[in-house]
Image 1 (cartoon, rainbow, N blue to C red):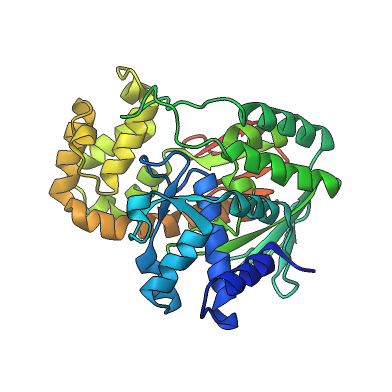
Image 2: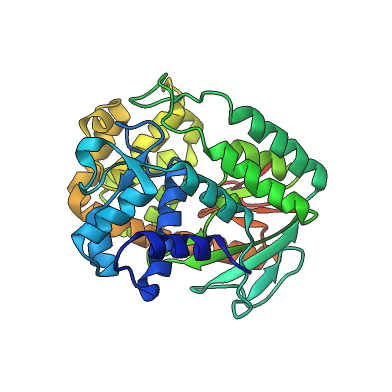
Length: 369
């Protein structure tokens, strides 16, 4: 079977002078990954509509090819602003043919028989830890059909930022719902069957390979999994930071975080936009030094001061994310073992399961979708 990656690899060899067979396939894989990131809106560039940033320098370092060949490959695959055609990390948008290839890639189901597969309707004692694996499952056809209808509708509507510095502005992307539609239509042809691969990254998190329910727009994913249960950690990073660092913190910082974790309603009661505050305090924990975040309100000013007394923003940026990601997976793996149910979807600090459970509400939230 000829895959999308094979087709793109062949196109690169035919159009890029001097590109070897050995290098064409890994470069094709990265081109599709970059295109997918842009279409998902995860690699945005505000200068060119529906665009992201593609780095020529990265190609040189990763694939050991000349600067000119890097630029030729990127210019062949992406539309770029004229003044930046061979620049590093400049506005780039997948050409129409590459966008269609990326959609074809999303509709394909890749499977490597050498990698272990877990069925979401059964339980395994040897849960995956620090390795690649698949999770397979079937979903209700009605749910999939309803989600496809909604994805088609939303792919033709403008989406606006709901908070933050760009509040009220139109988002720089309209392709995320199209990706969901294509992915779900492919699953519908398989009578609701999905088999999704997860890769364990050095940072400590599990990420889906390519496109899947983990990175699908939440509003569409929730329709697909209507009747299922979403479980995640309450105030996850601050709870895990308490486990890891509370003995290093001063009395005031411990008190602040305890109030956030155990008296959440009171903590957010006087804030006009609690969701925005939640994002800002998490950013501060991870070392953000943006004045707009620091001076958002009295709580952010105070938290920034207390965190800086403990550890500098620079050190927090270098250290905390990896520590917290590893701790996050400890929480998730422990709960999965307790529940004895393989999740349908893993979403970093939580997952989606078929059954309802009584959980410790201080640590876990469970919500029927």
